[in-house]
Image (cartoon, rainbow, N blue to C red; front, side):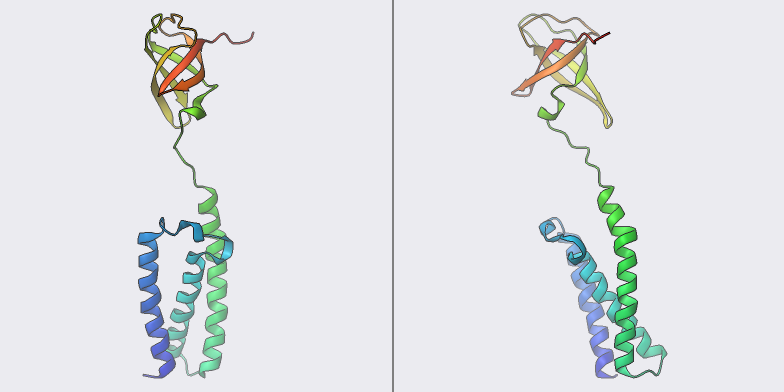
Amino acid sequence: MREIEQIFLYGLFAIGLITILYVLFADAIDGMDSGILNPTTVLTFLLFICAAGFILLKLTNWNEEIIIIVALVVSSIITFLLYFFVLVPLASAEVSTAYTNESLQGQVARVIVPIPMDGFGEIVIETVNGIISKRATGYDQEEIEYNKQVLIIDVEDGTFLVKEYEPLK
């Protein structure tokens, strides 16, 4: 086995192992993602250099310098295609279903358990992610009947302070 062949083969194993570790611990080093030089693209680039080099060494009789140059070109093309057609669309398609109670302020909800004067009831908020039910009380301690629409004014200790909502006509 030639020395360059061993380098490509050991590179494949090492980069494959690093890739597996990166997949397992990606959240811990998430801040390293900065454009094209993020760990995913760097590992992809190196992996394809080693793979293309090893395959070319086995299948051709080219000299080592040409194989390295071809491996660099092939790796650059594949990494470019992977980055722009897979990684960029995946990053922009990331949608979070998370919400905070404060982000629901200003939303219109519906009362499903009547809110008594100076007491608590329950409201539901319809969002694109589904229906959220929350404990609620009247903002001015007023009574609000079942199935009335309410506007979420504020949140205190997980309790939504609401006022009856009257849409503009």
